[in-house]
Amino acid sequence: MKKIIALVLAVVLAASCMFVMASCGDSKNNSSSKKEEAKELHMATNAEFPPYEYMEKNKIVGIDPDIAQAICDKLGYKLVIDNMQFDAIIAAVTSGKADFGMAGMTVTDERKEAVDFTDTYATTTQVIIVRDKDSKVASADDLEGSAIGVQLGTTGDIFASDVKDAKIQRFSKGADAVEALSTGKIDAVIIDSEPAKEFVKAKEGLKILDDPFAEEEYAICLKKGSDLTAEFNKALKELKKDGSLEKIVNKYIGD
Ligand code: GLN
Image (cartoon, rainbow, N blue to C red; front, top):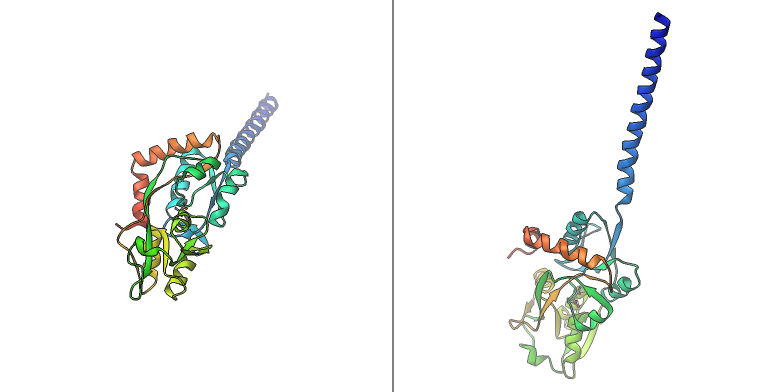
């Protein structure tokens, strides 16, 4: 009898051990496969545009990465940021190399022909930066015939291209245009207002002209017809509604 009881106990014990191991293994598998399942979304950006995106100790930070992270957290994606030239972003999105582009990118009719845009998340203006002291450009009207620096492929580039007799110098970084202005190589830089403030703050002897140029709105661009656009809009709407978006902007833009 004792032997039988011992045998039964042993069998029960072995069975329950196996059960526990199996279920432990299971739950482990589940959680790791869940992690693996989080699909990566690649964001194409140009980290030369503070405070929207810039490098800080080898990391791309700024308003756009934070908003993108908040969207991906909401939708259950893993965010991967790919840094590239600004004028390569739309091609990266249309070719499918990147899932979306986010780079303080202004919604324009021309870009809308190539990509879809989400709802807008920021309003901005184009401004003119000049040297503080010896500037011959005091307003937008004075730009005629002057040497204007812009970042290649931006809306600033488009505006400068409309200025009569302007000698346009296209730089891959806004900061390089500002450097050329500072050393007297060009007369003015046309660029978005927030990076303009950052660049002027970082360099002596420059100022932003009072009359802003044109009002623009930023949005995220996606491949034409992408299902993600509706998902992104839903997440953006929630982030606007619950104050998260404002909080992110306030973190980088003091006023
Ligand atoms: N907002 C401008 C544009 O969309 C500049 C963007 C940028 O340089 N990152 O063209």
